[in-house]
Length: 76
Image 1 (cartoon, rainbow, N blue to C red):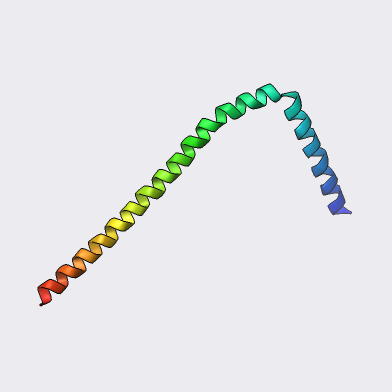
Image 2 (image 1 turned 180 degrees about the vertical axis):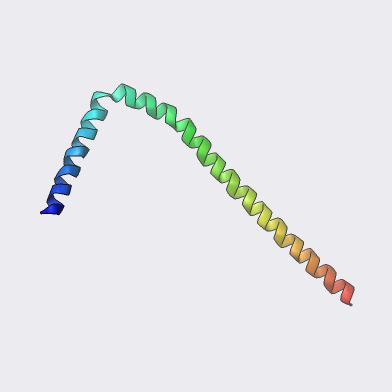
């Protein structure tokens, strides 16, 4: 029975949430319009960090390759 209580509370809260969104639709849209640029900024920052990390890894790999080829040339 405990699962049924949780399910019932979940359904009631979901219905109240939908009703609240419907009642405050103008305010909800205003908030969404304000959140979208912040979300885009955060996603852009994440992609920037991923790009910088990838470029650093590639530069380290290139450095290792150059160092390895220089060692081979000096040995011969």
